[in-house]
Image 1: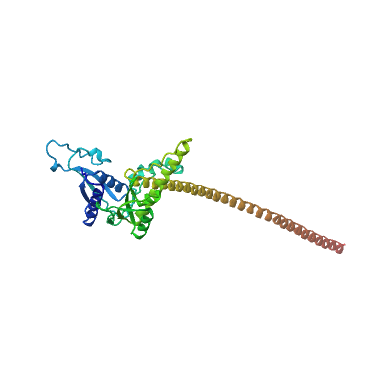
Image 2 (image 1 turned 120 degrees about the horizontal axis):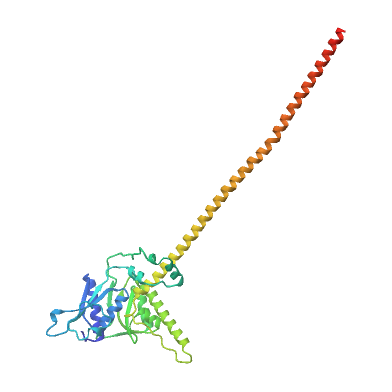
Length: 349
């Protein structure tokens, strides 16, 4: 395990990452140190590095030295590796540019963020995140550039105003600082209103920087709200200070996965509600069409009945007129026939 100074280990780690990026290596190795493990874990949680693992150089192990278990490659504290000789860190570089901080596994493990999302997820628990795959694109490293701002022989301190001015002049990325609260970024320094010793500037894609700013702001607001609730619960006692979770223990990928999972669940709940509403509208349209068909049939039947009732009186009048005219004709013929017979009788007499 390395026992160099803090700034020596930081510069060694960042220089190794920069060398791996320049030579396009999949991973880099360096001796294990406390600050190196903390900083590399922090970069993994921020989505800058792909992964970090711990190993032992067996060629340098002599005598009855303790051997490291290869199964325990991922540790969160250097104290777990205390007493093991020839330990080293393996930093796996992230060669997927613009890759989102969340993944399909984190989405599947993340719980919904709101009550509506929970209700939507309860309706379809097995299809909440089915078929979702994060997009991948260009083959470039996430830390596009690394610029060291402090050396082991000279540390550069910056106030908050100087830090914000440097950020406006620099390319998109984040600044790494060492403060009384430990290793922080310029985003944390802005939210807390503090300065610190500048360690390095990591050039990142603008989309990655925007996502980190939003996630760190939500983290700070949640911690402030928890401290305010604890202060309200303390009756007459001194309010407890705000407990900030170190970045080496806070996973930005899990936080982004929870947010995206909640939004997906709420969107799916809205889509299910919209589909149910459309189904109801279709049922109403079907009922309306059925009613219109029935009304059309009744109107046609009424029209036929009215036409039949109009034609029936005309037929009776025409039949009655024909019979009376024939009767009058027969009467006229009868009178004419009677007069002729009377004349013939008078002439005979």
